[in-house]
Image (cartoon, rainbow, N blue to C red; front, side, top):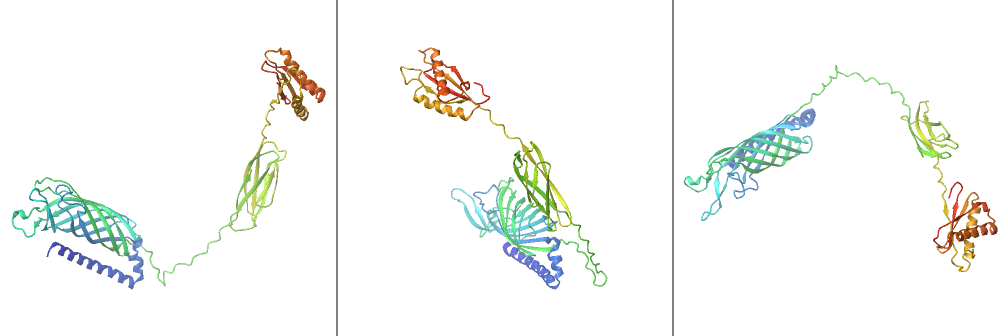
Length: 457
């Protein structure tokens, strides 16, 4: 019987034994529903022992052409079994054994001995152990990661249908081995899960043939199969009372809790305003007994009015400063609660300081013979100036007479005087409100400046 047949027979026997134990637990559950609550749920649902049986492939994706020195574990098929002891729902210690059948051998060579693959016979066994961490043990889909270390035994590999010492190119070897990886389990029923995949990096330390130098080989191991669960971590259930002697005492009715007062908060919109403004006060109250609520309001200044969830605060004639508003709510049994909010009365922004204003400019360039004459176009400008002065009796007018560089400054003063004469005689303005100034030699014109009350030219 070759290795593959022996391994399949061993896996079948272990699976049969595991299935028998599984059926016994299921029968116990059917006979006694209490077993379902204690054994099947296991207190927290975590089995004590997990047994994994499945198919495994060693050296996935590697060949002698692209592997590392001394790699003799290339593309091997076999079976694997691991036994895990769970300390809790996260941590377990795992023992792992696997066997692989070496049915083909890749021979390398040069010249006339080109690389080729021949049939062979041989076997390899791994025996590993280490910790395993699991997440989601109580769920339908769980993830685990493990790191195992141990050894690997490879038997001598013999070329099929070959005679002589050269027909055994690989001798029997023992080497160190370790794995690191993880997998995914899908729970089918409470005691049986399907291991969808177990993928692991595996390192071996076989000596290179024929040099005998030790080297590290990097491989990938893939496995899949069934996971059987046995035993559970039980919680200590409270003793079942006897119908006759252990009847628990009747519960004593607890007195109702004392009534709680309502709660209240209040807000103001706006929170700040000038004297004479108005702010809307809003109260938000809750009663745990859903009773009818009554609202009252008080303010440290101004006037507040309202008897429901809103009130209006007016601050006419109130000096700047804070005003404290107290909102009170009372339920139908007289229990009350209060909340306070502050509204700020601020001083109004100061009025902007008055500024001088430049009015229209009168030109004396049009009449070439009478350079100081106030013509009709100039009178139109002065008419607008007169209206402005009449609308603001406290304002004053400054007339600045300018002159040409070829003229004397007195000509500029005369132009300003002619404007003042027109405004006081023809428009009726008080001449005391009009000041005359001599300007600069920048042209034959006069500029007019309005000075509000309190502004000095």
